[in-house]
Structure formats: structure tokens, C-alpha cells
Image (cartoon, helix red, strand yellow):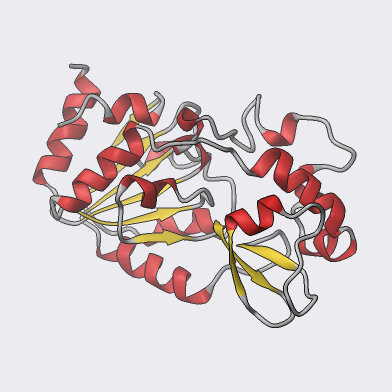
Length: 239
């Protein structure tokens, strides 16, 4: 076993209140594209930049174009949890992991069995009418021919945080609480470039700060242990 993996295992073994903070890199090994990597959505060519399409003002002005992008790029059919998701669910079942704080919107942590998942940017699995609030599942939106509409006539939108929208205050508060109480924080699969989400890691006051990401991040110098490998590959070596 690699020396860094051994160190990570040691930290996990001696910790009692672990929190995991993750981003898109956690799901790339499940076939879901990273937004900011070389092959990610932000480096592909569309009629409009993805950041513009995924903004609230664009959604309001061009819902048809939004849903074309949504069905083409945000919905990844058949994606399943990978070793990273499964290991975190196992740690929670053992009583060691207290929370998963994720920037992802794919629901794979829950599919793996994790219970306390704090979704900073919402979820594609839940949808609601912007007029009356009626809830709809993902199938309803995916199967709609054009713009999904509620029985009341309102547009049904995914329960995700678009650009220009604020994060859910309750999810933010719970995330801060969990991170500030943790004795170990594992940051994985994130460039720590998206704020305010990335700023949450500064609330950590515990003993072990570990960073697992294929490319360098702004917090590498603050971490006790930095592992530059795919997170699923790392977690598959742990017990």
C-alpha cells in the first residue's frame, strides 16, 4: 500500500467525527462529466456558454434552450455509484462519517446508501413548479417533449441552484455546523474554485485535513495530507 494511502487509513482509523466535502471529481468515475476539467462541460462548444445557460436569467428568458442543454448534458442515464460513494456510505454506517457535504447534483451519494447528505447546489432528482410549487420526479422532466409544464401551466424546473441564485440557508447552516464539529475533514474531487461553497472548508477546526484531487488546489498548503489521484481509486484501497 502506498505510504500516503497508509497515512490516510491511519487518520480515518483514529478519527471519530469525519466529514467529507466533495465536488464533481467524485462523480467523474461514474461517467458524469466534470464541469471545469479539460474534458468538462465548460470546455465544450455550445451556442451559449454553459455558465450562461445554467443561470437564472437565462432560464427565465430561454427555458427551451435551457432544457435542451439539460437533457443533453446534465442527465447522465445509467450512472451508478463508484468506489468513492460506496466507501463513504460504509464509513457512515460504521458511525465514523457524520456528513457528506457535496457540490454535486446527481444523487449518487444517496444511491450508494449515504443518509446525511447536504447538497449545496440542490439535486436533479427533485423538480418543482415555479408557479404553484407542486413537486415532480426526474422522469417527468426528462420525458417532457419540450418545456415541462405543471397541471397549473407553470414551468417545472429542477431543484438545483442556478447561477445568480443563493444557496439554501438551511443546508449552508447545517454544513457549517458539521464541518466545524469534525475532527477530520476529507476534501475530495473538487478544485475549490466555486464560492461560496468552497469557503465552507475554512470552518474546519479539527485535527486532520486531507485533500484528494487530481490537480492542485488553493488549499494544498494547508492540508496535512495531499493525494493527487482519482478519489475512487484512493478509496478502493482503504478498508
